[in-house]
Length: 90
Image (cartoon, rainbow, N blue to C red; front, side):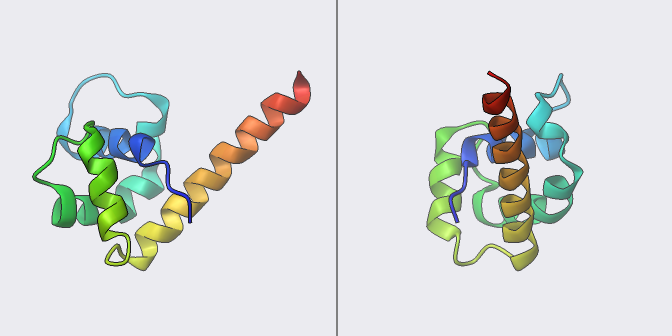
């Protein structure tokens, strides 16, 4: 599983800690629903938008809940499809 954790960290920032304008990736309700607990459990001592969160999730990936892993996979698949669709139009 290749995880783009920067986007994921930004999503969690919007989900649980930041009350400002959110980037598009912060609006994924599935990631918010299934991964906020894992973020708080394993990486909650880190600022959500920091690169340290990426490393924290990578370090703890074996502990992350199955539902969160599935949500990450689904999110990334959707992002890859969007990129592929954009590339095919150019």
